[in-house]
Length: 279
Image 1 (cartoon, rainbow, N blue to C red):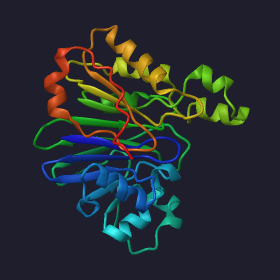
Image 2 (image 1 turned 180 degrees about the vertical axis):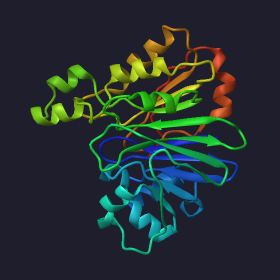
Image 3 (image 1 turned 45 degrees about the vertical axis):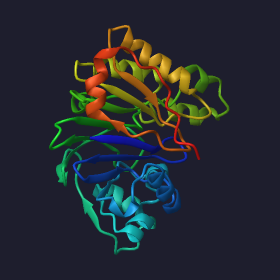
Image 4 (image 1 turned 90 degrees about the vertical axis):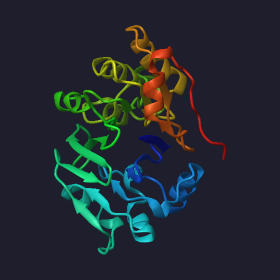
């Protein structure tokens, strides 16, 4: 299994996952042109994407859904409520496959399990993706107001996590947003802070966890080094030897090879901040 962020933040989110010839995207929060550019930077032909899994209706996760489905024929997997909330993006002839929260389904060599999250969207979901051949489990959980019991249970046993670390609580409090926006971001249906991401990562720690990609960082109320330091520090204090990376907003991350990370996880802490492929 290989995984890469195409970009993550308030201006767009998309994650690429592949295994045994199956290629999917989790969210498509960029224009069609941007999706093509970012996939091609990874050496991926946009025409080879097998499906898109949409976690919720916010435009930083859905902006390219309609145009990409029409241009490349990508099937869109989303809940009925999310489909209704995305009606303005769709023209009616896209291939849309609906599923309810908690549903499990297969896309080629990938097994997808959805679960509810707390966020101020029509029907917010997160997913785990398990490789049918490798047996490796990927957890994708951003836009979390708080990590519920259900979220913790769903993410248990993941080998790699894409986990929100949206804001630093001090930077949010002292930042430029109006107070109402600050309350929304820091509230139970907003976004996860660095501290809460660290606490959740520690709860999910197990011998098979080989890497974490921190995602959806606020450009106004966070700092990549600060986010990485807080989450990695909490994990390394407990003897973990995996890798912590931070997703960039403007460019794709490297392709993370999960079998390779599993093999290297015992070699010691890896603190490199992978920025991106050059533009």
